[in-house]
Every structure is written in C-alpha cells, then in structure tokens.
Image (cartoon, rainbow, N blue to C red; front, top):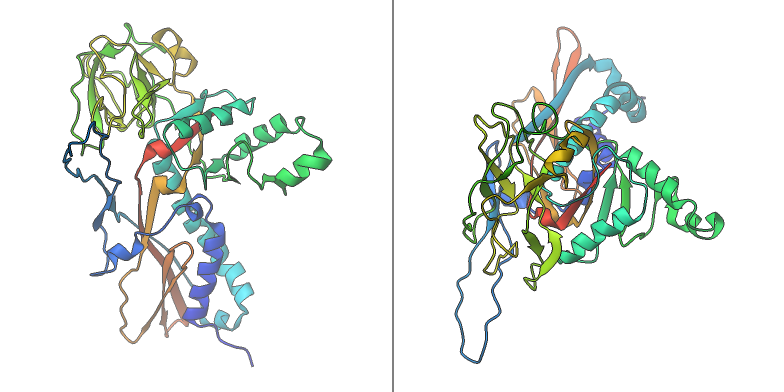
Length: 422
C-alpha cells in the first residue's frame, strides 16, 4: 500500500533542499533570529544590533572617565516571500523524490535564489572598499593580496575570511594561478571539483556563486565626464560618534544629469583611512560607498556616504576632514578618466569576514482552521525557517500548497569586507 505524503514530510524535504541551494547566505551568522521571537514577528519589526563600544587611550596616572557611546544598526524584517501551486491529491501517493521533482524543485530553487541574490545586492552596496577596475578582468593574484591588506589595515579578524566570487571571476583566478605551481603537487591540494577548497592567498574559504551581483557605475555626466571636476563644496563638519553615515556637500557636476549610483565608491583628496585600533593613517585614501543615487538639480550635490567621516575620537575613521575644493574621484578615476568607467557594468565579488552582515529568518505565525494543514520547519545551522501550508478543494479533488519565508538582512560593519571589481 502506498504511503501518502504528509505536510510535515513535504516541509522537511523543502528545508533540506533549500538549505543546499543557499550559497552566500549560508556563510553569514544568523544569531539575531531569536530577537524577533518574543512577541511573534511581522513585517516591519525591527531590532537594534549593537556595534562594539570603543574608547581612546589616555595619558598618565590620572583616571579619565569616558562615556560609553552606544552605536546600533537597525535590522528590519521587510521580506515576506512565498510560492504556491495546486496539484491533484492523488499525487500524494507519489514517492517524495517524484513529488519533489515534479512540483517542488524549481520553486524551491527560485526561492533560495531570491534570498541569496537579495542579500548579495545589499552586501556589496554596504561595503566601501574595493580592489580591481570595473570592466577589467583580474589578471594577477596581487589583486586579492591587496584586498587582504585592506582587511588587515581595518583590523578585520584573521580567521574565517571568505571569498564569494562570480563564475567569471573564479574562472579568471584559475587561469591566473594554474601556471604558478606544479599541478600535480599543489593545485590538486588547492582546488577540488574546479573550486578553491583550501586557504589560499590569505583567505580561508573560497566560494563561487552565480548570484554575485553586477553593479552599473553612474553616468558621471553627459559625455562621460562633468563639464568641471567634482570637488568638495565646503570643509566637512565631523559627525557624532553615534552616526552611521555622513553627508558631504559637493559641486562641479552637470545639472539634471545622474552622476552617481548607490554602490559607487568615491575618494576625497588627502583624506586617508585609519586603522581603527591605532588610529594611525594607513597611507591609503579612504574609500566611501555612496548610499543613494545622486542626480543634481544644479552643479551642487549632497552625497550620503559610508563610513561616517570622523577625524578624532574613539570612532575615528579618517586622518583629516575633507576641505573645500578637495578633488573627488570615482572608483579611483579622476574627471578626465571618467569615460573609462562611465556606465560600466562589473561583477561585485566579495571578500569578507562573516560578521560584517546579519541575516535573520523569522517564524511566520501559524493558524489552524480544521481544513488547513500547516507545518513550520527550521534549520538550526542556517536559521532558515519555512512555513508550508496545504489545503484542499473536495469538489475538484485539487490540493493547494504554498511555501512562505520571512526575513531581513543588514550590513553591520561594511569595512569588514572588500569588493572585487572586474
């Protein structure tokens, strides 16, 4: 006698298969899920994720009391996604493998693909540091070494550093390294099934994900360059220790022309990044990611950027505040070379410490009305929570099934990552 599939059996199979389809998201900690469980989560719920508190070193034997400036990042549950379909109730007599292949495989893959792609889109737009050049393939391992150096300068913990590359970037890296070693002695130990499997170039784990997002650089003017060079429009005023971003005032743009896109990266002349522990300059211009699209109505433009600009205090980010008329570059390019990157699309590979971002999956409230069957399953490893709901229509012998997930994601400390342009 055939065994009828139950809603629980279907839900558990969906969970296993979706877990296997998650790429980038599977590398990010899910420790904030439980914070939403106190009253039952719903769309719009928010928790504040606290960032580490820091203080300045003081001189001499006299104690100097310093305030604890609390900084927190809001993590909002803003994604509720589901997919559903109907089927013949007689199909419940199928084996699980047959039922999954016929009805569930593509939908589960699409749901996992959305989560992965959505989080990768948020991730790259929250990371201010980059290596490589938009539109130019990476042709040397030094590009990845540069990324590791940037992470060192930002005091990113040494362990668990992870690379998430596009398929094209991974292929290019294989081409770069294949001639460096004896293939039988070394490459066989570094790569497995075409993927880098061991610590390499100072990075602990390597992954390839087809969902790595592509970024389109801003138009940067009517013909690839503004009519005058973009400059700071005033000497910048330092933001408070609790601020998570800064707004800079600039001019020199073409009016009514989109000049920057969210995710573009700029530098400001003579404004250098600092090591967050020592406060000393790294000797590298501080890179700022643009947080919102910019289309000036005049030559002036206010630009929201991360990290926040502070030249003193325990949360110091730069060696000096930007001054009036300081030159602004985009992805390292001066005005005369804006045409090289104007509107260029480039994959945004990531090298990061997993703690740079948070993803929270939450339980969708359950209900039972007699005619409806519901099951919720949760994966302890990824935090993934899926609710499966099933109901039937006796007159037509049709059954209906939907899979629901609810989650939110947020970059917490973008300076714990580096983007790889190619």
